[in-house]
Image (cartoon, one colour):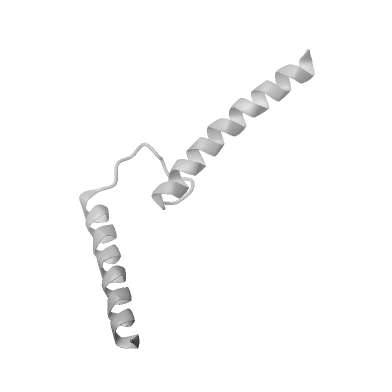
Length: 66
């Protein structure tokens, strides 16, 4: 019975940590940061600007290579 309790507690802790780290990896933030904190407006703007820059760069490279 003691072994079963240890396995169940280990699974619960593992699922909790996996969820915590998985959310942070999905949001592309530091793995140990709080996953429930909303990104600031500056962070959102920076992410959108870098995404726009990358997309524009790909289109320009594609057009110049043809």
